[in-house]
Length: 130
Image 1 (tube, one colour):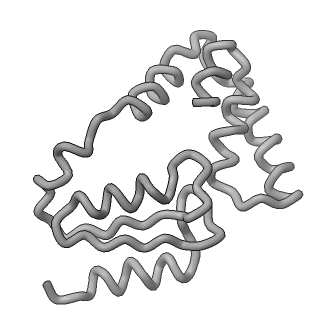
Image 2: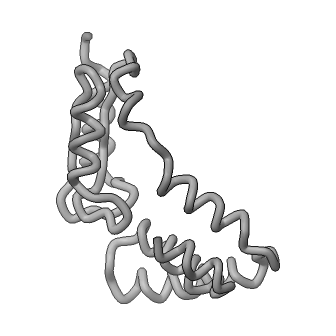
């Protein structure tokens, strides 16, 4: 993943910029905010980037698919369809692997999904009788 590569190269501001870019919708104001926040984060970053690298690599290598069928709790998989770090296919496979899970993909949203529609979807799921 790009974040891990940048962190290994000690390009902290750029690594944090990529991470923060997942959260905000693309716009001029969000790009400015991401740049400022990533700069501030990089100023207080540890000299050794290994924590960030290990975290990113663990997330990328985590093997979860074989255990999804063991989840017995009611599950709502919610994602932004435009998530730059995870594909729609991954979200679909995740939801399909969990018994009786429901998937909601929010068009035009990145990582994480948020906003009023997201709130309505989660509340509706929580209110359902199962």
